[in-house]
Length: 243
Image (cartoon, rainbow, N blue to C red; front, side, top):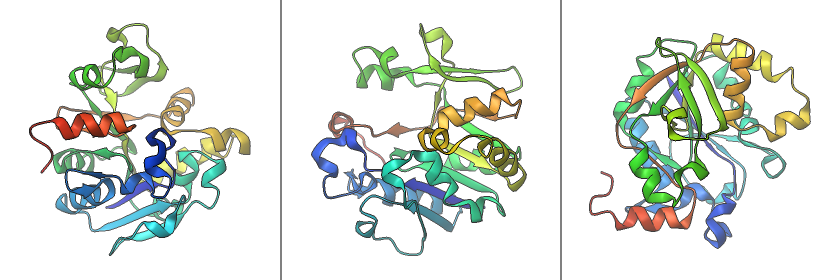
């Protein structure tokens, strides 16, 4: 099992905090976001870790990781970063993670123990966090629906009410080599411009249109994402951080 952290973007919603430092190097609770992730992954038993870099790549100093480069980070979205690591994805089971999230080793173990071709965990008890982060939680939420057999049915559409949201995509997924082949076939059908604009949520929605199965794993463990300086201030205000 390998892990790939997608850390090529600038993180423009962080304001001037990322003028001279990549978003993944933002500090929270005594460590940078990417240092937290590497610790979590290694605590989960994963020692082969790749990091896709782009913006200010030379500022990301890490030991015992493999670096991939999205040379076109400025003109592309996160799926291009994902494809930058295809050498691993074509040959190994890989867990893929956004670089601006924190989660628990148990969440990673849930993914490791799932043997479907493409799988994602989702946060079941997300509402309290969103109510702390946003005046109107629906302003930053999208639909997420699963079947009785834990197969993804819908993701990424505008949500009219919270009943359309069974959980929150956590910015984590796992692919097997056979799953990545199916994913690649779909992505290869897109033109270059469409591929440049694609994010992971939209990619998953496209897979559903091609009837490619995405397995879902409910998870109520600790999880946060860092989108803004407001998020940092919120998390730092919590009495108990992350250990």
